[in-house]
Length: 172
Picture 1 (tube, rainbow, N blue to C red):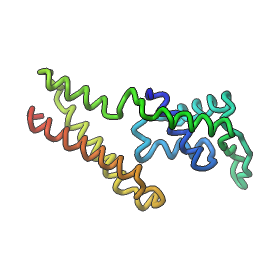
Picture 2: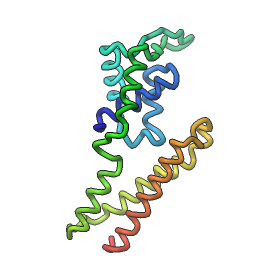
Picture 3: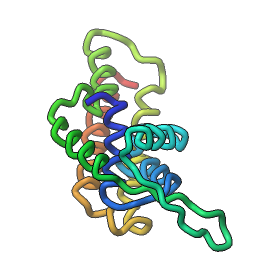
């Protein structure tokens, strides 16, 4: 599964769980484990447009009261079949999420020299992401203890460990 398909699958999985409007989906993929996919709000809306073209989603206007009406999206039967087809191909990941880190470590292992501060920035970014993942309990109790959240925390912890070992080995 390519990164583009992984991004589509993430949005599709949210819609498979429950109907939602575009902003709600964009907010969900910008925090927690799905943030690793790097989906902007514009990218989410582009994916939703592709789903509309494929006939994967149905739209229903929801009154907004004092706010503008929202368009709530739900999967059609065709969309559910598309979701099931994507689940069937999950075992064929073309690009694991750790590829950028693997590329960085391969470069160092081959004798490459990293610019000053690269590892410190990588460590700081992952610590911030891990802090957000660990602190998500107050904001998102429904998902804070999910299998997805545990996997995301463990991946971040493993990446932090590798980066710290690498920094200790090369001294920066």
